[in-house]
Picture 1 (cartoon, one colour):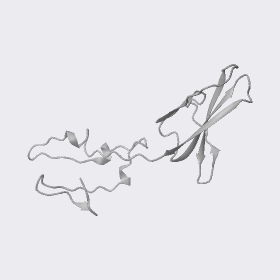
Picture 2 (cartoon, helix red, strand yellow; picture 1 turned 30 degrees about the horizontal axis):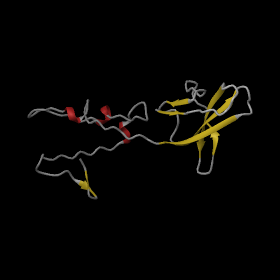
Picture 3 (cartoon, rainbow, N blue to C red; picture 1 turned 180 degrees about the vertical axis):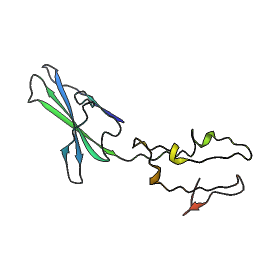
Picture 4 (cartoon, rainbow, N blue to C red; picture 1 turned 90 degrees about the vertical axis):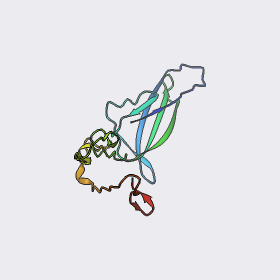
Length: 154
């Protein structure tokens, strides 16, 4: 989710009644010309704009607020901001409630099941088949975890 708010100031003597309208355009490397039709639950007629997660695909967007004077429709002003929607990282959970909650005694099994307990915030479900799992073990304080190109796996 994200939220953008505007501050509208007037420098005029007439009526201060206005209409507000947000538009969202998808941007390419050269222009922002394709207007996105938003879900009807996204309110675009207030000075604030709230976009729920998964409303927009990954990419760059131009958010434009147009403010028009009701008594003088030719008097309008607009301002734009740009946002980039990126993928969220996977939250890997090897066990239910996370690895900080593991307590096991001697000779007790521990089932690691990241496919069941991991979370992909960008999707409704986590697809475990898209991932390859590799486990490393060590004896605490005797060995370091392996590293790849100097980056410690921990």
